[in-house]
Length: 313
Length: 281
Image: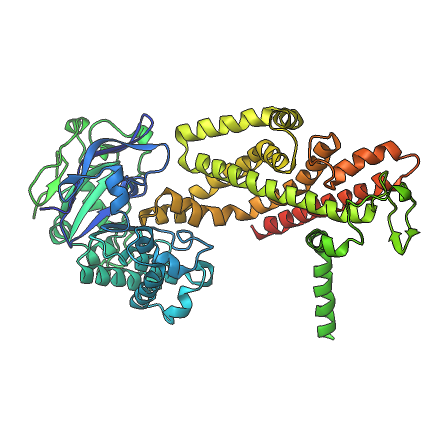
């Protein structure tokens, strides 16, 4: 049975639809990547799962279930920091500037009253050691401003994993970091999650990261899921034209030299300008009249929402 | 040589905080009033009424003169600092606690809580403070505790406004969302994560309000609505001294001077802290 099941999730800002009928499920211990361009609704989907949408945004439809039981606000309050954890893009501004990092790592234990501050402090130091922070006893007493961005991201990972959650949502955890440490941080996160049996929902727009870490991939476009598949088949034989184009944008070492880098024409239209039917229609080379109605997400293990999917080789 | 320069720089910096030093001195005077005051502030000597500053009698010197009942003005000014400062500190704490709680709840919870609380703040701000104070004193009766209650009742909206605005700005910062993702509930988010981050501006407001509270207490006592005789209060001393201003100028002048110095130092300190916090941003 799946750990987390999102069914037909919709998020709106007033009358404006931002996430429209998203389905997603995550099995225990698996790493699912949620990919798509900026504005495709990835982060909103994640925040809806955590029940942390900002003022003015609301879930207007669908259901989110953990272990088959719907997530209510009261249940979410209990589960956040226990079974559910999340880490964000901006490591430095995501930490309280006036609180020592050790206390912030211990936050979930203390907030749920599962350890005395002293015990939680000791566990926090241990956790800081495990995420590879040198001199954890000394670092634990420092403020975020005294740490580098990469170290702050390690602190956030430590804070998220200290409660041994069953699901970790990582919202572009390496976007704000130096390229040289991105790989380290991702490897660390993957390792620790695997050790604890934590399932990960990894939000990213970096296909390289997806290939490295994910078991399954869920591609979003215009607030909808367009393709969902295990990572191997998706990279080998993408079915949705958008996924195929997304994969072609990654430059490869064996590309013929001097060939221009591939780009997808146009931009993601703003939610106000989403076309009727298939939302990729306006940028899709395969679009026809049929695409004026909405394609359903179909298939068993490899699901795609397209009337003219790519041929399987 | 560099040591001399840094010493000069350091003493210049220390000197630029003179309002804090002056305020500290006045607070110390208030705390140690019984030991500092040369005489009992309430002891009357009807043979030594309305004497000039420097008047000597039976070994005692009235350094700042005596009032209409022959009490030592210096001792009364020193003891008056106790009343002024304790009323101001307690009313700042009380109004600050209420106002900050209201402002933070409104700014963090939003929705109907925000509407109800902030409209309440608007209503309180629309009533003239002195009118509200007079009505409240008329109902409760004058006195030390009631003055504090009245001041808190009229001044909490100011803190609510500032706390509300600051909370709105902080609540959207990513670290607040992270703490919620870690399972922190509303009380923990407000107390551990938001309050420390808005404390700076609130401290500036509290310092400026302190000066205002001193003035307000003096005003109420001047009107006879504040601290009651024989308790020494600068406002009450001004009120009485006004009747003798032509013949015994010292009765009103010295408490007035003390009031001026206390309010000035509090306001200058508030401004100075505001500058420093503004620079730190």
